[in-house]
Amino acid sequence: MNPPANSVWLHRFAWFTAALTLMLPVTTGAIVTTLKAGMIFSDWPSSNGYNMLAYPWLNAARDEFVEHGHRLSGMTIGLLSLSLAIAAWCFDRRPLVRLMASAIFLAVFAQGMLGGARVLMDEQLLALLHGDFAALVFSLMAVLILITSKGWETRPRLTSVEDSQSVGNSAKVLLATLVAQYVMGGFLRHLRERGEFAWAWMVHPWFALVVLFATVMFVFTVRGTESPHIRRCVTALIGFTIAQSLIGLATWYVKYGVPSWGVVAQQDSPAQIVICSMHKVVGLLTLMSSVVAVFCCWAVKPLRLDRTSTSSIGNSVAGVAT
Image 1 (cartoon, one colour):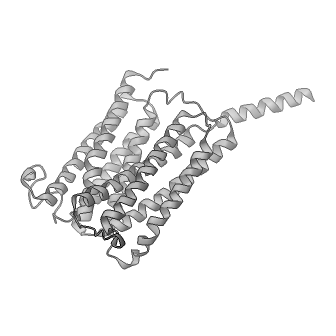
Image 2: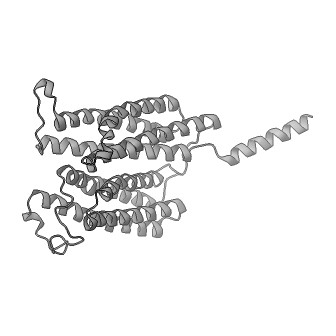
Image 3: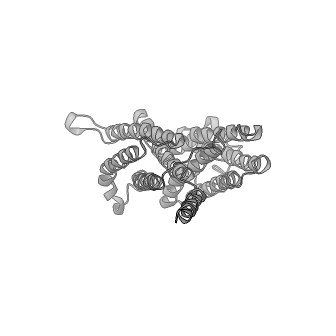
């Protein structure tokens, strides 16, 4: 069954919003953190007293250019997410689609308020929350893309209750490990000067092995599954996990160097800025893929009605036979 034309356009709009979110506020936000430019302006929503749209952005210095660009991109995504929610309520009658589109707008709004509070209060913990909350916003966008896609309403479901539970539990374990790793990465990026978070320096690199193990276990658990949606999640997770592992090694190399090899890290070098920012962005994509995998496992599990009906038929047959 093909989706209505309105749903097709809503799906494309959701894709456009998510892609622009990744390219603009997510990427610029990662660069802002890498450059430690989050407090280059002490005011918000104005920038050095200028209205956000009146600030001479193109003539600004590097840090001001990136931070103000991050603010402008956040405003752009706010307007897009509002339009997306309105479009969902006007053109799609499915409650889940409307709920998800509304949740995206509210999450984007909350993300903007967190960013503003971080500046006005000059609080690093809010910077951490602002950075990590972006993963939730982007994950909601990915789920909306999924549920508005062609064939979602007629998606094949898993036939075995036991297999469904096994796949779902494995996906949840992977999500939990990725959340822990993502948060520890946030500690290193935002709170690295605080002594109480010094443990993350050692735990974060080695915990990557736990993430790799959980990913492998998930892959083996879902191999042969009849759900194409879960198989696509597995493919994305494998790709992002491998890429993130390699970028993580590169991040350590450009950030700390290898003194035994005579390699000394050059602070604020172009390679360091690009690779450290990529590590954040790909980490967000990896976490997003895990969220979508958990959602897919829930959405393709056997219908309870089917199990009840099968049980009732079996009891009826048994009664007749008796």
